Length: 485
Ligand code: ATP
Image 1 (cartoon, rainbow, N blue to C red):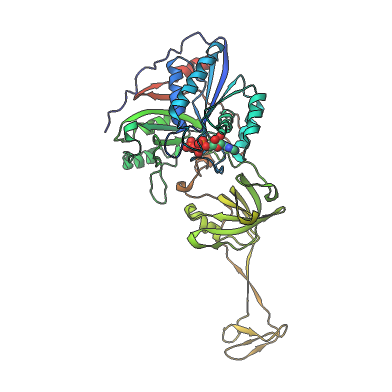
Image 2: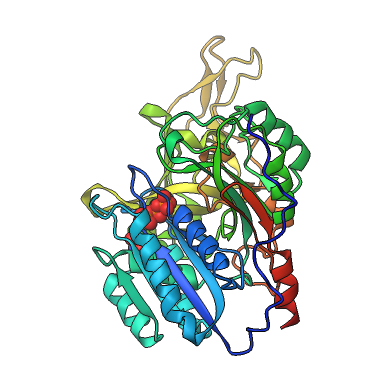
């Protein structure tokens, strides 16, 4: 096991400086520095953040990971973009831009197709139009030309290395702020030598950490399978990430893990992970289009059926149209919930619209809320009042006769049976192993700062923690200094 970093070491920055008088807000958005073959935009942002601190440039917040519409087909993994918010003297703007551009260039692989590294710089207060753009980028498909128009009208500046698509995420990242529901993630990064190898994290130590910190962290494990979820798979530099509502508890939780490979650096990010920020727009089926993240309220139209591969499908309708709803196998128990629906049930379905064949569309279900259950009525032939056997019809309007004892019941009619519904009203989610980054876990329905879709007033204290080449320093001093301004 590695020796622990010196957690108590002093910050390398002098936050008592008086040079904060003529400061301007300066916002940096970055996206698309990674590819399926490696890299990670969070890593680029962590490097930039540390370099800024080393130059005594003061961030006004944690760096942000902002996840955007998870149904965009050209995303690499989780459609994440990054933002860094600063207060700097105008004379340093040029220097910061150069630092960002150089770091993005050094950490991206633009020769790999579909990697379009981009940065957007915005000086001054974030205009409301940019915040609205962010909300749309969480739900819709945005065009590059529209983004360019907004960058120009907001007085922002863009930089791209290859294609222009990365500017969408880079601008959208800037518009998500602490007044919206958010969480934190502590991420540890691997050293270059270990990239692509199995992550050497003691799984039992993750389970112990989860037991101790389950009140303030989420999705460390999948409770159904016991699978550890903090380590990603693949060649990217992330060794592990722990998610939760309190950055101090995340740091504590991280320190309790047993890690058997060197850690290059650690960063705490503020983020919209676990907030359902992509599921706040209620739409009608008639106005929805492919790749949107949506909420529809309506009624089940057809009996759900489990098809080959274990996926469940049913038809769903509202007053503007109908759509197929797919509940895929990885969503586990959510499929059994869907299978218990019957036509007429009123439900709210949440997920991503996918184009289907013949201009039809399918909603890939992420969450399901049962609002109202209809009676499950079955019709049956009446039983014989003597022997109890099922009767047969003697023809339309002519009653029934017993097959066994041949007794006739000319006035008997088909009987109506009410089948007990096991399903209950309420919200149903897939297990954590099938969550998207943005999926709000059940635990956060109690702790989240803001109810889904409602912007709150919460103003967290400004604090960031980071590790620079294995040496952890606290930015608590910066917090104190900033709160005095
Ligand atoms: P990772 O999660 O590993 O960081 P990723 O999944 O974020 O990777 P990117 O490489 O960032 O994938 O690619 C996503 C691309 O989609 C970016 O170019 C981004 O600008 C663009 N994009 C993001 N949101 C939208 C949107 N709502 N509409 C159109 N394009 C978008």
